[in-house]
Structures are given as C-alpha cells and as structure tokens.
Length: 66
Image (cartoon, rainbow, N blue to C red; front, top):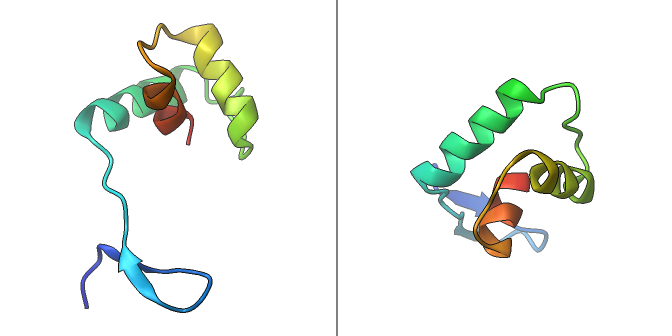
C-alpha cells in the first residue's frame, strides 16, 4: 500500500499533497525559532508567519502555516 494515499471523510483513498523543499525548510525554521508561539490553529499560525517572516505570496504563507 502506497504511503502517498490518504483516506478522506467518505472512506475513499486519494493522493495526498506533497510539500516542496521550500515549504518544508521555511516551516522547520519558523518552528525552531518560534516554537512557543506556534499552535494547532491555522489562523493563529498564519498571523505568526506574517509577523516573523517575509513571504512573497499568500499561497506560500498558507502552505507554511499549515
């Protein structure tokens, strides 16, 4: 069974999304430096990303915050 498949709410298996190196590296750096501020809430993490990093686009910021 392939690790890239995830089961959705309806029980069907679909391809999962793959994050790029850029997103992984930026996320790792933000988590290492601001570990105490990061929560499980996406909207809070999105605001933290805006405060602590200069990110070129909203899409990239949202991927990093997720």
